[in-house]
Image 1 (cartoon, rainbow, N blue to C red):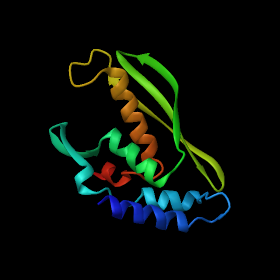
Image 2 (cartoon, one colour; image 1 turned 60 degrees about the vertical axis):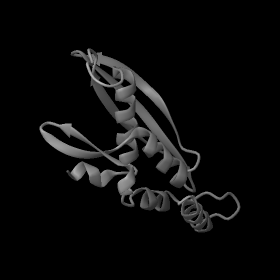
Image 3 (spheres, rainbow, N blue to C red; image 1 turned 45 degrees about the vertical axis):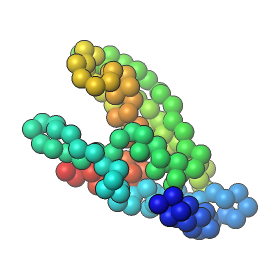
Length: 143
C-alpha cells in the first residue's frame, strides 16, 4: 500500500505546471483532494439519530500532506457564545498561483460530557470543514 501512495505522489509531482519550483496549480490540488475518500479512512458515529460517515482529523491531515504539500493552518479566533466554544481557523495551501486559503469554524459545548475536550473538538471540526472547502471529503456532507 505504501508503494502505491508513493507512485500516486510521484505521478502528482510529475504533473506540476512549473518544473522549477514543483508548485502545482490549485485546480490540480482541489481535483486530487476531491477524490473519494478510501473506505478504510472513514469512520461511523451516531448523530441526530442517524449513523453518519466522517473523516477523522488525523486522516484529513494525511490527505492534506499527500496532495497539498506545504499546507498549514492557524487559529484565527476563539469565542464563547451561549455556552459554546467557537473556533475559527484558516487553512492555507501554497500553489502555483500563490497561497490560497479557506476559513471555517468549529463549535463544541463548553460543558462537554463526551470524548475529548471542547477546544480540541472544535479545532478538529474547523480543520475538517476548511479542508472540505478545498474538496476533501466534501461528498460526506451530502449524507
